[in-house]
Image 1: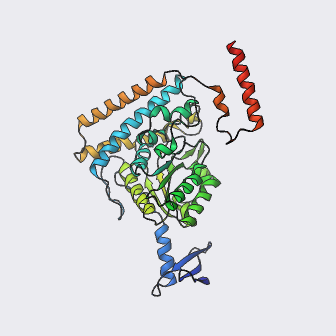
Image 2: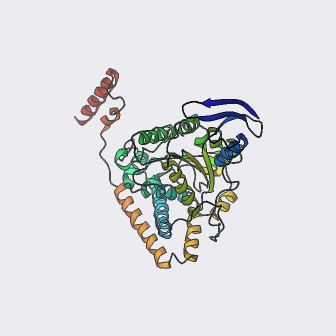
Length: 404
């Protein structure tokens, strides 16, 4: 039912306020051609936003091939082989980082074991000129992007707010508060567009992040600005201990994008081939000026929330074992082997590289750093306040007294 007809004089486009097919609200559609009916415009608008009814998939849990939805391309063989090497290395890095918490070398570490397909595919879908906005759980993604692992772990070690230069690597500081990086990603994407840069921003977040107001504000800003940004939701089924069912009752988190007019999709987050294909398509969509995209990846957090968490208090072993059968690394290894793209020698070489990488991280992280306690007061304000200068002076005096 058409509620109101508006005519945009500047662009010579007719806009209609139309009641949703389900009767749950009103949205705007544009009729850009005299031959296009309002009903056709509505159908085209809605269909262009809806995600697939089931998560996009290229490879089943056992590594066999399944037919994906039309429109998604199989990633190049070489890219899939590179993804496998990065997944092996990433998992070994993740295991090593977890071990470092037990040795007192890291204050905390949020493992992404089981989410490697998302971590690696998200990075491979981007170009070096693109920006990545990551969370505290995305250390594997940052390492895969080429950042120094010790610099990545600086935050979790407690040495500094961020161990790398964000502008140099085009990776924003890892964000601990949920979803606060989402508006930043939109702002960066809009800035890139205004500067004429052929670049996009990708914002990683988890299912818990979609429950935050920052996430929804970011979606609305992105849609209104038509910003070149991709929101990548890694739905690992738990926001710390809160299960997904206590956060959301929509068919999928991907549907959250529709209300803002954002094209949305859902994908099997443990199928690297599918995640890479969907994200590559989403990045191309955003880069070409067609607007933002929301992608939800269905995956699972195999380890506890962090080393300080006891996951057995809110989930049972049977659930974890079930998801272990859908392990993304084993799935990709079987798939590539069956296609003749991976040999036993390749597997061994990847594992050896992972061990060497972990050994280097372990060695460097076991080296003590010299702490400058006065750095606590740096970058709190652009210009230190009188109170801050007074506090800094008090600490400096105490440190000097200890040396005497």
